Image 1 (tube, rainbow, N blue to C red):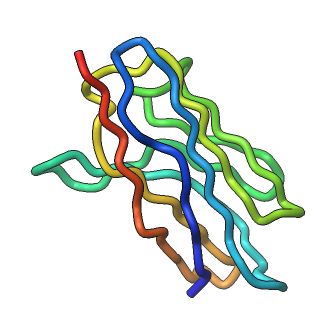
Image 2 (image 1 turned 180 degrees about the vertical axis):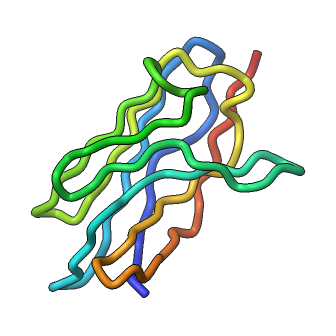
Length: 116
């Protein structure tokens, strides 16, 4: 398991912006992909965006054009900039790291609430 510490999130009005950060602690982590997932009340956890060590990104259709994922490989950090937020973006956002050995780790989650 890779320890992941998330920060950011909070309460924002619809149309506003928020940023999330996640840092993996440790050395020689050999992380391949990092990403963000979210879980709304009563719903399953879903992919928001992922980014590989080479910078290839993947977004859920619902966030394309509004969210931007980025990564700092030297810091083992991944970021999510969320713009034009909608009430349906509300949920607990989880950071994920996948190592080259396909070991998956999760952060503790951070709440994002978008009011209408």
